Length: 157
Length: 157
Length: 157
Image 1 (cartoon, rainbow over the protein chains, first blue to last red):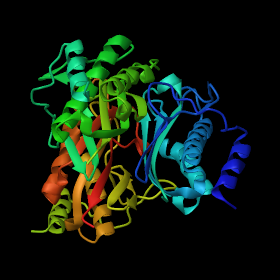
Image 2: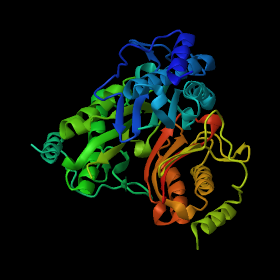
Image 3: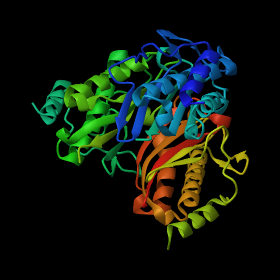
């Protein structure tokens, strides 16, 4: 089964489509390619024009909701890679993922939030989905998003 | 009109000079080059030895002031690129910009703050100024700066 | 004296061993290599299974304790580079270091915290230890760590 098929299965499992325009909120671009290196802009858990999960994790938002948010962010990043490369089979490696969680003062499960994104990347991409990761708890995020994720990946060619 | 001329015009429009020493606050360097990739250290809105905009955005600091801060950070990054490369015409592409805004608990316009930096990069550099971006709201920044910006760019050679 | 010897001296001076497993907290890897570029996951000040320094800097945690935390994070990153490359002599350059400090609302010495890591990198690696740096104050970190550090480095070959 190809990474693209697994991506479609993950979208179906989440119940969201990632086929429409992947809007960015400002004067920049969602993806830049430099040789074989691909930089993806910070993704919030937006589907269409709606940010699905907003608010402070550990207060208004549960760990499970934050994990859903992290998955949606990761799916957006995968959708951008797929459009750029034609197929997710052309991802050589995810190099770096940074996950920012809008956190309550005492919420310390940022790694558990990010795990949901990491697992999804591994499920869809297999070995090329293994990555380095940094997880931090921030005070706010654009549009009150609960989670934001960016990444750097390499392409096979 | 060259990117260097547009840089000078942007400095004049802001009313600040970026010709002096661009101090860094600690035991590190402002720019490292690795092949054609250029890493720029996090820039706060400092001109000379003064951090121009300090305090929490959405509380003590307005969106407009934070946008000014973001522009000054971006100008410092451009000044560093110009010194390294001789001319801003030698910037091939800005690859990644990260903008950290010291935010009030309910301030969610981090993208609008970062837009000021993104627009300036595009105005000065043209197409090579288009970049991927991550905007987050943090709890504090060095020297109580309202905004901090770092970036990665590529050089033509 | 080699960088590896200086690394061992730094470990002795800190009073900790970095020889055991360097655990990561989730479904990702501590290091990814892409050509000559090495990405290191975010490191918290963990020795064995204990996070040595936890809590909010400027409130529960002093600047000196946070600096110790930053050094331990940097030692972990160095240990990962050493294992990957065989010797720290094979580090060509540290390109980018990002230091996240779990900060009190009014704590603005994030650069001073990060300086401890920067100095250690320079002490152990010499010139190749010079790097670009971004220091920010965040609201929380995984496992209530006081400091988290990630980095990108290049290898000699």
